[in-house]
Image (tube, rainbow, N blue to C red; front, side):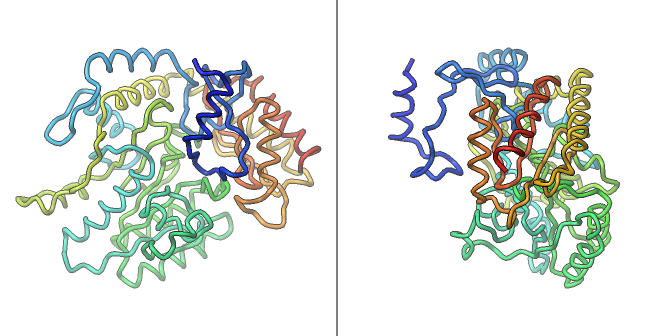
Length: 429
């Protein structure tokens, strides 16, 4: 095995890390093992993973049940082209997802990650109207201001113009932007949507349900979103729920859209889908949408795919993760985390250095008072390195600190995180 110095030397020589200014970044921490909520570094330290390694890890690192399933599947079938072929893990996963997804989902399309699941959803929505009428004027996409749906070009386009995509903005397609229906602003958001839809050119509306993730964990109630989806349905505009972050229990229900009366036409899923083991994306749709792609000619089919579409090992991971997710023990763990987050919010929400402290299911968000809320706030680095010094992995979104742990975390480990957050209120903010 390479020593710590050797790993870091090779990393510096050959690796370009995501969301990182490589000139000023500190040397990365070599991780050699994961178990439960902990990541173990080469020098013997253990870090409590308070953000589920970018929101993907549901049940803890290297969960033995998922490891066992991976080994068995890898020994049987590692991959097969998914055009004209199929296999049991993909078929079983699709049937199980359809059974638990909110609304009238009917078909599953596989891909590799969250951004590709969004790209697929957008292409399906646009081609749906094209297949209905090649001369259609329904080509505009509605999205929330300050939303985030990924870093590919379509996903960037529907995330609005922001500092993340500034170098590419002249290459992005135009979208129609509305304000999210924050509490007290529901009517304003709905009036914006109505004005856009009444032009008659809207193909679809894509949204992050109940919480805008990368925008700063901005939580909003379901009632306003219900009205937006209802108006879209009444005026023949497709709706796309991006549940890449919120899916699989993060918001207190299996899916954020489970808390809505109105259901979307298309779902995007990834991140926690495989329990944090392997890349996999899912785009689900209703039978009505799927039927629009059927016909005698290949041109009306959905001509899209990825080399690793429906990978058997990834699908196997997702099936194992679902097994764990639906167990009563996991359900109780999610309730415990949600209750602890709420209690902590009650304790600190009135703190003079906080603009807000709120929670949604297993997600806790705290926003410090600064001149402006931004991912590029300098406070971010001070907070990040403070928590690393306490052997906790929390990765603030600028001046917004959030906790989104694996479901296997204990109440004592949550309390440890909360105690360090209180320390930052006195020493860092």
